[in-house]
Length: 154
Image (cartoon, rainbow, N blue to C red; front, side, top):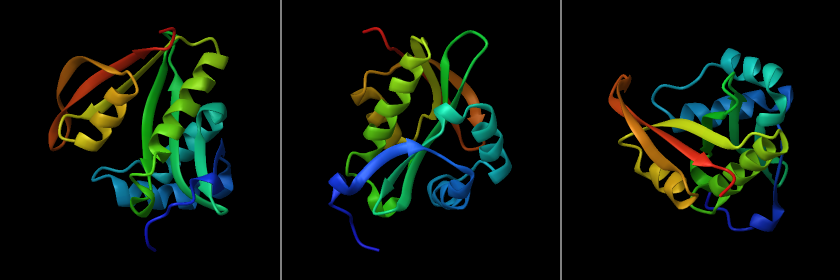
């Protein structure tokens, strides 16, 4: 697989059970401490509207998933794009689509945790208006995390 340039052939839609193998494959390529397929299935069942995939030429190449907390926030749990499709704006496309679903559910804030050493993710979130609220020590086995948030009203 080479790089991918035809973004007009890419669209965001809700994830389905048939997407779980591709989602798990992207997760395994993207993270040192990946979520299990069972975790993804649970999120898909509990919060199907917040589980989105980006599809290019009928292939799932990225996903975003989260939940609505009892405090009334959207909590983004995981977002990833297949390594061979990165750097094309697909992560931003997924993030914006996730925020739109949150707004449609009358949720005004998104929160997330991100490793302090994940520069690519930090840059994506900052570019899209997220700010660091606090540092969470030892959140990951190999690093601290930032708790970040974005007010969707602004």
